[in-house]
Image 1 (spheres, one colour):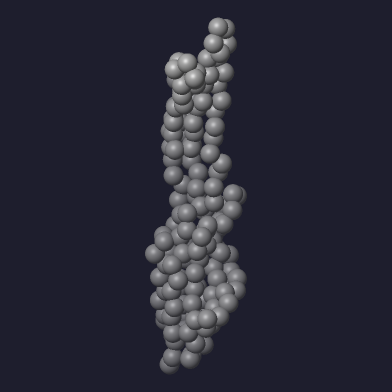
Image 2: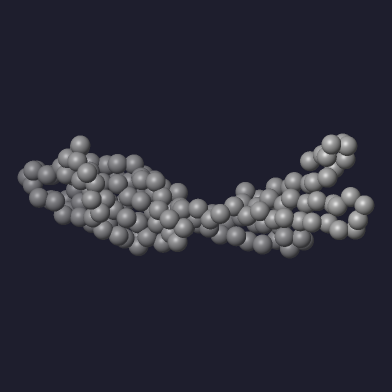
Length: 148
């Protein structure tokens, strides 16, 4: 970044997807200021590939687990491994009508869940990933019907 005289007053360096370093050399002095900007930790990505299977009214839901992504940051000359974005649990929601309102069905700590429905029922499901930074957007929606 250049000042009004055309000299480099600031340097801006992206050192990872989550970290930027802004440096300034104070003109005419031996001081050098560095500001490291770290992106705020974010909620996990939404679960993908939600599927539902029916076995006599026992509904088995499964989805891709939301796992951590790892990045290597350079802090001076030392690489630092950073891992973030994993889901610690999943919120499962369901509704019994296409235009109905979703309700919280359960919380799971793995990427599967089993529900039971009665004959003549159609149910819609969606799943959210949760970690210490918040809740993801919803997964794809699946519907399944059961009749004897």
